[in-house]
Image 1 (spheres, rainbow, N blue to C red):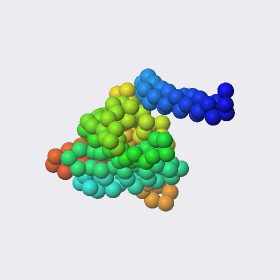
Image 2 (cartoon, one colour):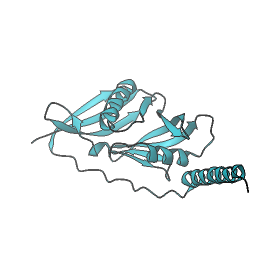
Image 3 (cartoon, rainbow, N blue to C red):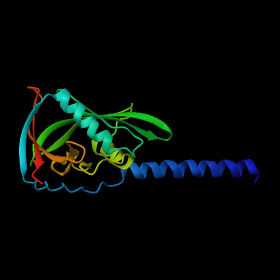
Image 4 (cartoon, helix red, strand yellow):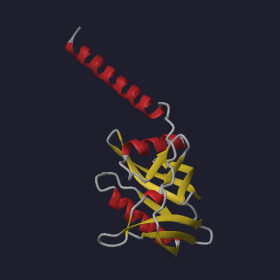
Length: 193
């Protein structure tokens, strides 16, 4: 057999293996991610803060950005009539924009985002696969839990340290998240000690 035939067969085999591997990684069964338990909030002063969706969006993006300093892939939150997350995924050296839209609810003071739709470039992929790709690609903060099988993202707000000053960190929980009326109420707890 001449060397060109051998080279072609070798290259053809490598392409088939690469496609099969990528297909397996994308379509393999998704393990269930348990929902974290809400943390017990510390004793201290309670301050109720009413904000707008735009202010919440700015605060959330600052907290996500500061928590993801090691991640190369940016994740941005947009809050309007619903909540959407936008990022980019690198697939076969191509940057694909990804936009996921969610319906927000409050669960034990934490924010639960149930997925409504997903757009990954021109691809038509299932929502749980898009969440799985995001979970595997991005090093998210520990208080942001992606649950692909449940098609949701759980923001464990009660676990998050909220910087209030140079050495002071508070805790936060959601009280109301009404996007139709542009009314978001958060309770900030300033620890007694």
